[in-house]
Image 1 (spheres, one colour):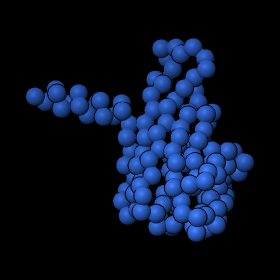
Image 2 (cartoon, rainbow, N blue to C red; image 1 turned 180 degrees about the vertical axis):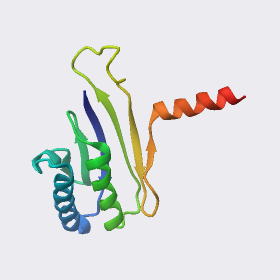
Image 3 (cartoon, helix red, strand yellow; image 1 turned 120 degrees about the horizontal axis):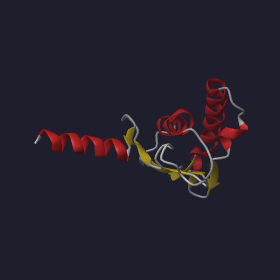
Image 4 (tube, one colour; image 1 turned 60 degrees about the vertical axis):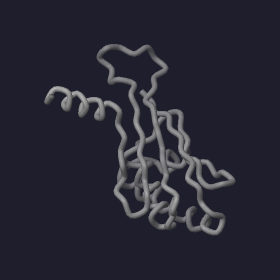
Length: 134
């Protein structure tokens, strides 16, 4: 099972050097916390003329690596534009009934607000419970 995701974080030119320092610091922290090589944490960032493009088509830990980095950038750079990233779990192999569902989700980060996680299966479960109460 792999994960594909994409999201563009717009970063003004005058904040790019500070952004790079935040990225390096967060890569070190995450590598230490997850006990993994730092190289594995940089592959999902692409410099783009308007900021940083979070892009992956194989594997990255959304909750432990991607969201904390995005949160640090939004908060420390005091970015006013919210950041939205969506992902999908994919498989090149044929799925079996015992495999976790392909699924996916998204998160939204805005400065001064908690991360809003959007998980379709959880939303569907909430709606089902609501229907059952009626």
